Image: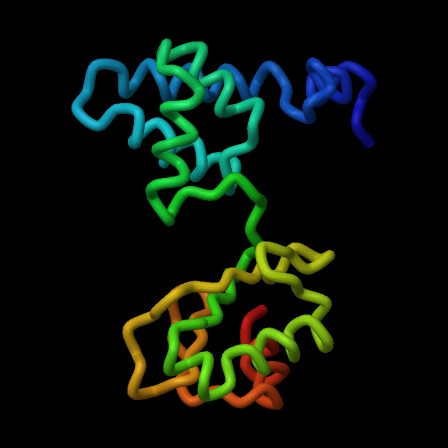
Length: 169
């Protein structure tokens, strides 16, 4: 059971992040200050720490680096590996490129919504899976294609999604 003082630390400012979290961010910033590509490294390490880049952490990074929030948001939105939403333990990417879409990509998304309760940019209640759509995974000859945490599954049928996802624990 968490002590009251621990609870207070976790909700500093009501944003769900405690002083300890902000101190870790400050250490990341200090370790990368003045280095080439420092802001990208800072964002990568912060995302590694939290699993995504929450707004309070972005604001702290902006404050500590004296880089405008708009510039930081620009970097986050430019690079596809940055995310501002929590991700599941396993990230499902459904290809929606022309070939995959025509051969059943939309039906795969429908099955994930129907059978797993997953919406695009959503996460399962247990935090096991999150869902992204991508424009192309570069496997057009194997379409429709999905990737689960980088592992590509080819010629996927909506009815196979249960077997595929249940293989990830």
